Length: 74
Image (cartoon, rainbow, N blue to C red; front, side):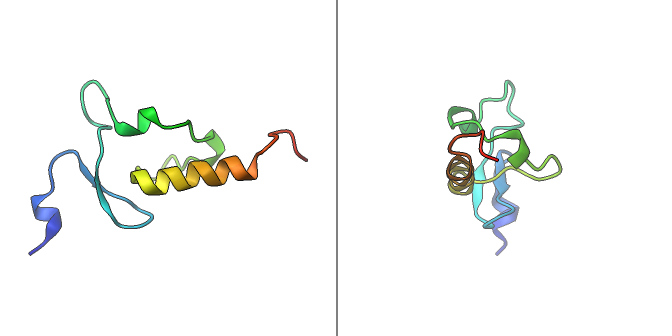
């Protein structure tokens, strides 16, 4: 039995961990859960990449915050 065969239209698979999650990116209007999370800095985005699951996105946001505490470090 393949889980992808029964996934809903809003279902996606995280490219980082492989977990399935609901993605609202294609909803009209776009009302995805990720819009309620802190913004991920643009330099951390992969324009060719797919959406991350809630856990991986939260981890990436936290990692970005730790790496840029003053945002003016050289």
